[in-house]
Length: 327
Image 1 (cartoon, rainbow, N blue to C red):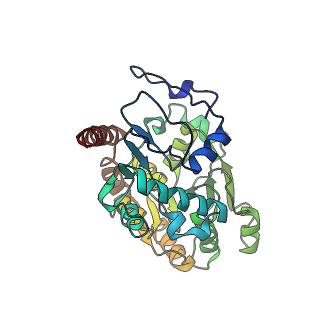
Image 2 (image 1 turned 135 degrees about the vertical axis):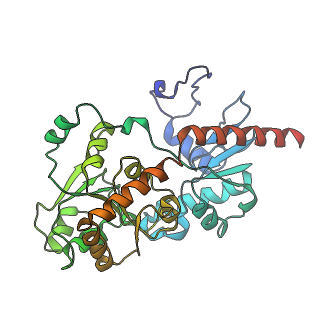
Image 3 (image 1 turned 120 degrees about the horizontal axis):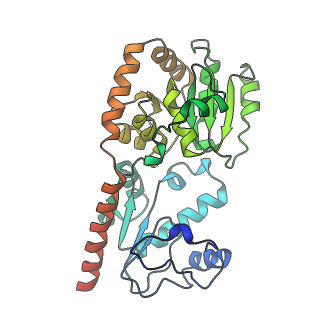
């Protein structure tokens, strides 16, 4: 599917190999349950719902969230329909389904007949987010204010950024800048219009766009708190990244965020700007609460590791291949 495959090269692993169809044709073929599949392999793991049909070779598929089923209104109608349609095919064919949290496993099991084949494999934090040696220069280049909130999210409806901006406009909210890191998604989320409608000062909310890992590490390190008001998530990597950076976290009660946070963040009910405003003020004005959350976050982040994720996947592969061989 990708013309440039060098990034997929791994020492000691054969490949990468390309399938004989361009991206659009391959997507259309797999959508219909036909088309080429990887050959001369022991197992196929599709890291998204874009999965080949199962033809003799064991198939593992990762489903990252249940949003197309639980919150379809936060996606495009076409996107939600595609995910549900392909999800049903995968549910019939896959030997194992990998999800990032038990919350996603529980949600998906209400819609797809896969409860007996679901395996929860959590995610981790990249070492690329370690604070760089030149953090002072990067902070100056980014023009970071002395105190600020950060939200890391694609600009789309399910991330709840409209709720966060409404919270900052509430009378109980502190007057603190908000920096938003993330690329634009669907849904026409216009931050400037949201800020104007909320009657906030135009310079109180600043969109940084998509930034590199080193800059993100600096922004997280200096933030007063990360705020994650999502309507739905599958895991919530920004929450875990903030924990690892020692940054206090305020998050919504989306089930996956509650699970990953494990009590190390400050929980606020979804869709309640006033409650979110009060939580932000309470944290900003309470240094002891900030210290407690930083300490809890660092402990919680240590529970997640990409090495552990890889080991659990490898064990799952062995089990799936062995089971298929006995059939």
